Length: 103
Image 1 (tube, rainbow, N blue to C red):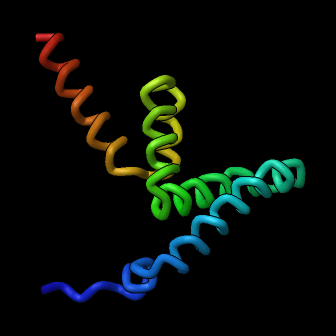
Image 2 (cartoon, rainbow, N blue to C red):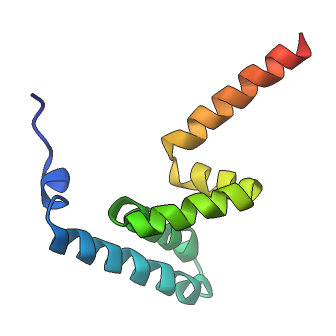
């Protein structure tokens, strides 16, 4: 059996998951405020906060899935920014479909 890394072991407790969710929400709230300052603050803070929220909250995942279903263009962009594996699978599937339609 593979040994779990420290982050996975810490995330197994409810208190740590809640703290990571709150940290993610705080980062997303701070992102627009930091965005007016020079530098790439918004581009870094918002995706990191979104990732923390999505990893640690089933509620946030449901909301995000609903958002992706309603706005596929924007959801694809956010998936790429967050480097989600679902975005890579979707791009590969679309490329195969495009090749099959072209033939």
